[in-house]
Amino acid sequence: QVQLVESGGGLVQAGGSLRLSCAASVSTFGSYAMGWFRQAPGKEREFVATINWTGGTTYYADSVKGRFTISRDNAKNTVYLQMNSLKPEDTAVYYCAASRGQLATRIGADFGSWGQGTQVIVSS
Image 1 (cartoon, rainbow, N blue to C red):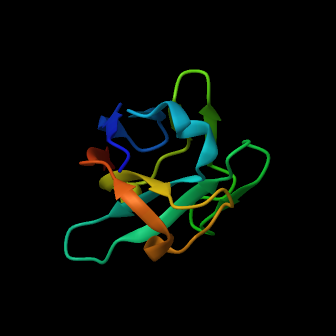
Image 2 (image 1 turned 45 degrees about the vertical axis):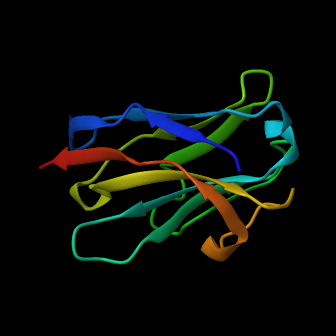
């Protein structure tokens, strides 16, 4: 199982930016697709973004398309989520996840390893 540690969350004003990072513990990081999910208080976890093993394919939730960018650096075993033009409705705990395969996927059940989450709060 891959151990994942997120960082970069915090409090930001609406319209601001944050960059989340997720460091993986395994040297085979480059073999897995990765994803970001989020869970707001009282709501179910939802898909945010995913990237395939090479970084060449990405998918986004409609709610973040054009504002968020997922990327990865396989040499550093790290995946990133650049979040711009943040809105109060982006407030949530953000989770990094490692897929069981190489292909980008929006399906939570396809991910076998999850980080502990990092809190993002966007004030209006």
